[in-house]
Structures are given as C-alpha cells and as structure tokens.
Image (cartoon, rainbow, N blue to C red; front, side, top):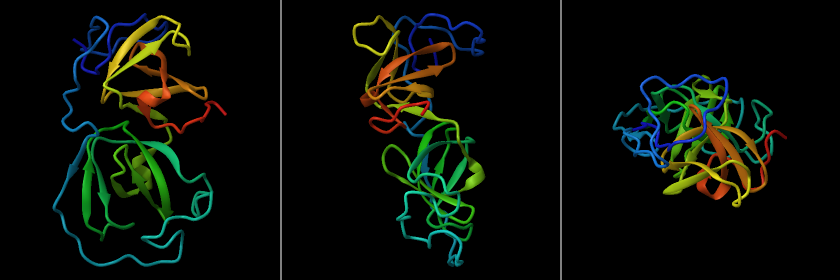
Length: 207
C-alpha cells in the first residue's frame, strides 16, 4: 500500500518510482505522519522583545498589497523547506516557540513580513513567525477533502486517474479557475479547488 494516501494511476513518463512506495487500487491509506498538518505545540518560553524599524512592526499586519521587505504580494502561498521548523510568537529568536512544524513541503501562507522573518498560517489558520530561509517558493497543496478525485482532464466528465486521501501533500503544477493539476510521485491529475488548500479561488497558474 502507498504511504502517501494516493491510489493507483497511470504512469507519468520520465519520472522515477518513489523508493519503498507501491501503488494501491484506486484508494491509498491514511498518512502515518501524526497530525494532518504536521504541527506540534510546544512549551518553550523565551522572554524579551524584538525592536527595529525595517518592515512591518511586530503584531501589525501589512496593510499594503506588497510586502514591505520583499515587495512580493501579501498574502502569498509558499511551502515549508524542512521537517522541523520552529514557529515563534514574534519575529525574532528571543520570542517564544508556539509551534513546531514537522512536515517538509506543507503549504503555508505568508501574511506579514518583518526584516528576515515571515508570519505564516496553515490550513487551520494556526501559525506565527519563521525565519525566511526555512520557507520555499515551491507551490504545494494539501488535500482537505476526505477523498479527492484526480481526473485526466479538468472536467468531471473525464476519467478518474486516481483518488487521494485527506492529508496528502502534492506539488502544484497548473491551475485553472476551478481546477488544479497536482502531482505526487508518479501520480498526477486534475482536482477541484474545493478539495485542496494552498491556492486561492480563481487563481490561475502559470499566470
């Protein structure tokens, strides 16, 4: 049985099989990754406060469309770069660690910037401040529907290539207003946007 929650699908030419992962018939098994979002709460406490003039002051959301530091759109989607990322209460190492994300590739949303720190939220609107180098610009999505059908084409009339379970993280390949093409391992297909998190309604990719 597959460990990524994806069912059987047609091979994708030119891609190698993931080591140790076997195809299942249409529906995979639940991910053995603990919490759906890979997030753990901590009790680490670090006092003091961060000060400075660059970017948006701590605790205030950026009012502009573009981030004050990067000049990139706010909010915007990115993904986690590693399997252990401390999420702090404020933009600095002196702030308390509220969460630890333990799932590389998980999609998150940047909602604020301050110097080298980015305030992020996940699909449950939980999050905080992380150092910018711990984030990747690679776009991914999280399956939020109990079962998401991956179609050969962006239409309900097209054949179902695979089914993915809730909690699966997949790479985002392309998006139309109501559909996105996603890929994990050798599995790919088009999924309805309401079944995933990590892309805005009506957003198209590439632009």
